Length: 106
Image 1 (tube, rainbow, N blue to C red):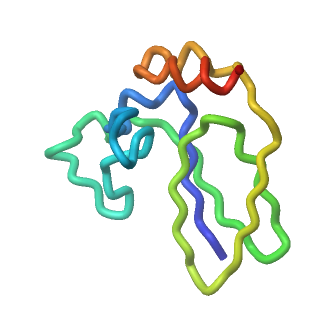
Image 2: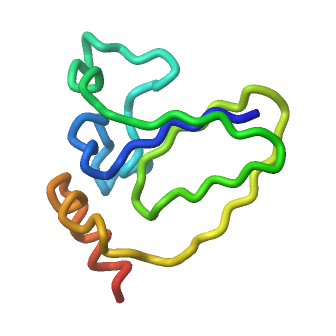
């Protein structure tokens, strides 16, 4: 089993994301397994979806959605990209990642 926590791109301001130039750019600086709410109080207001996948399950993760994965036991994962979408361009721009969207449209 594997537990996923998913956040819509419109939640990016609440996820304490590293800036684009950082080696972990667009990833959260928060340890979602043990969040420090004193340091990141905005994280308490983030809205997400949680799902536990079991053997044989498939999860479609839309482009630009934020996700955190917890392996609950030994498992394997296979990823593939389904394409680039501009559906969340405004959300990404609002969080300072407009150049990501522009670069992927080229």
